[in-house]
Length: 350
Image (cartoon, rainbow, N blue to C red):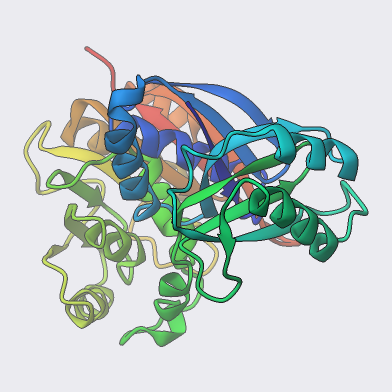
């Protein structure tokens, strides 16, 4: 059963990684079917009698995602030219996507410059194909939205879930009770939380929590959060932000090189440590801070847990020396002088 994730395109690799992590979280068995510009298609295992259960799980994924727009139940995939698309629409059996008596609308979206097809004309023609199958159109309030995503190929399907990206804009750093410059944007913070594969009810720890941007996003997906920062005024601001969103939390003033936590007590770590230029670092050096804090993160993380770390410099050696296995890396260009390195580490069996 094919499902397509319409990715945001705001980053080259993070949206895809976030989707795959979320599918792992909910325990669906899947294989990647195709990866196009701003679209990931996965083949989810399951028989016809559990389609409804799979779709419910897919909807739950949409409530966690930050870097996607829509999730489609795929009807077909074809070349991105008008005649191929119309032929696919004419021969497609859509009865598994729309019930008798339900209304529909067709929407098309072009990704970058992969085609010159006019979306409005394509919507009209594909809408006619569906009309001839015995269904009624309703362009304003349809029961079902058929969607054409025009990338290297045309992905044709129905929308089963939409990601509410406006909620992240409402949580922009400057709109929170306590603002401090240089923090992660909410969509990035949520994607990092998701990539840690932390589940609802588990514990996520941020040893450099700052104003709690990561903790807020973890709290919104039902994760228990604990944060630590060396500056008491920043912890006060973090508390304001978490309370402002009515999220349960535990916050500590302390040193990431001497964590006041017992061994193997947190399920995941997501953190954005100080980069050194404008941050207050109460350590011998940035290298010392990283070396010792990575050892401490390894100590408090449960076996099998994932640590997602944002840095300005490569930190793989610090992580490996602490005992971590390297799972992956993503680069995010912030501006000319700053490229964030997002590293994913895994704590295996000792």
